[in-house]
Image 1 (tube, rainbow, N blue to C red):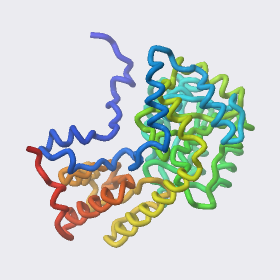
Image 2 (image 1 turned 90 degrees about the vertical axis):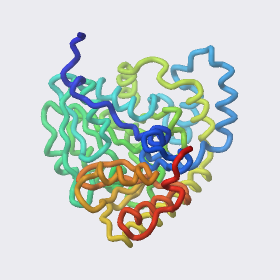
Image 3 (image 1 turned 45 degrees about the horizontal axis):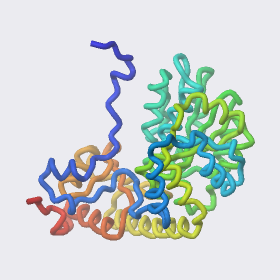
Length: 374
């Protein structure tokens, strides 16, 4: 039997959110009666023009993709107000996080981040052979930047700041983020993960993109998976100082973003009105769901994203999410009775509230939520 690295062997594979088809088979439900509100996917399809562009690109499937993502990088750089040399593309934020930690970490080093936050930070550290320190959030479910600073030691090579934070949806004001970065040693790389940047409406928040191009120890991550509805394409990008991007690129596999993903992301750009429309729709739906949770006296964090972190009665998150699954609503269990629900379409949100009331014994679930397949 092969000998596997101890840290890798101890891992359980990351749960990406159970597919609707798997839940339908297991529970004998009609797939059309099930909704998936676990992965923070957009309830809408790709932006106008994307499907046509992606379909057209398939004719060149015999060719390798552009390793430099030249066309995508050129257009994106103009929109961000940076140089193309400030951009690093990868197969979604997860691949970029892994590449970054591999580039700066390794045995004898550690990575610091808040907790709960995106669990892939832990995976990235383990994959790189580094240790990790998970710093508890404050009582408002926000990153505790002071405690994170205290956790940094001489072995720390990377600090990840998820802002807005996943899975709680909370933010830290821009000034506090900037003070935190300024307080750190220049040999500690700060990664600010802004996967949910486009959903934030709070004036206290702003992106660190323009700061990143000026500082060698700061990288900002973004993704096309969320508001741009390209989760299936796996394309994300990092923004940083040109010298930093040059070094990080050395830790990447070649041809990291496939041709269809590049073309789809390119076609999505330049549609500011569509980004705003989708952000507005999400904010309205999030407000509705937050109000429904408040009416039912369920604790929740203040979300600035396309999901809400809330607590069900009891302390068993898995049991709580399983009850929703039985009613055809797939959520993400977190910890201690806390679960995360993605903001869905109007119909999906209504079904979630109906299932919630059924579980809380406030009324029946929608009749089709328990429909059985033939």
